[in-house]
Amino acid sequence: MNIIKRVAILTLSLIVAVSFAFSGIASAATKGKIIVAGSTALLPLTQQAAKEFKKLNPKVSVSVSGSSSIAGPQSVTKGAATIGAVDWDATTDVPGFKAFSGLKAHKIAVIPFATIIHKENPVKNLTTKQLQDIYSGKIKNWKEVGGKDAAIVVVNRKHGSGTRVNYQMKALNGAAFMTKGDNYKEVGKSGEMVTGVDSNPNAIGYVDLAYVKGDIKAVDINGVAATTNNVINGTYKVWSYGYLVTKGEPKGADAEFIKYIQSSKFQNGSLTKLKFIPIAKMK
Image (cartoon, rainbow, N blue to C red; front, side, top):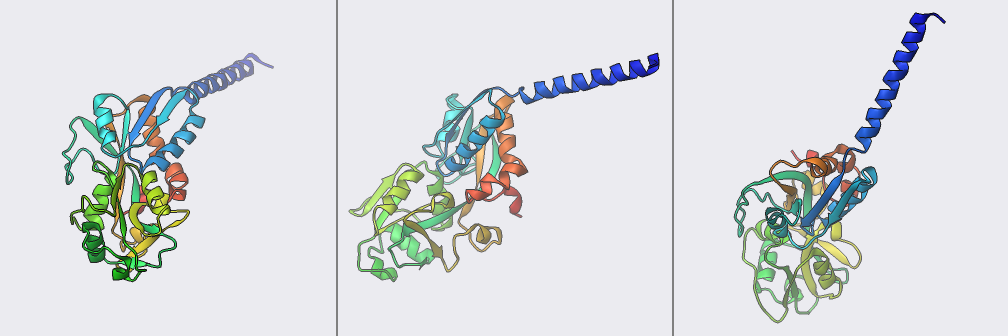
């Protein structure tokens, strides 16, 4: 073998070795600690994303919790979390909440919300006016809307819930909620809402579609079913974008985590399976 061939082979080997070395560095480059807090509507999504991201990035610590949307930007502002999950753009004003300064919002999903009742309840459809009257306390019995002769138990989310903000704006067209009553109660989290309706055949509540399972069912609104397809085609109006917020531009593991959730792999995979809608689907 002449010297030119030997030099060429050695050069190629060196290039391959360096390439493998750099690829190894790249695969292990993401490290750090991610703390996600906030929305329980987005909790199934953030938990699944954390699980998948951790497998791909074993050197990253990922902690995910949920209490309410308002806790997302509050936790990031205070430094208690690196990422906040929220059911509205926390950098703008929404009814009941002022914009948070110094935060950057990252759109990650479309969240369809549903009116829920127990599967034993025969009611299949409610109009906007009926929902307004139920949640204001004017309609008190299921027989007034085509159901059985039974008192309606209204389950509401507490102030600070993004699901509550969106449901009031879009399902009730901004109409006020009742605040007290013998058959009225408030719960803190999406899971508690599900339990409140699941355990009472006469209860009514609302959650995002990811939580509609077991002994609860979604009611049509104005004759339109709460489905992802109906959100996409524009006929079902009770939905919102979900966001992750960070203090300024995200860096390191936080930036990579957000990019992973926004990736086509996650958007068209786990996110869709959980009954959220990829942001690219909305026109």
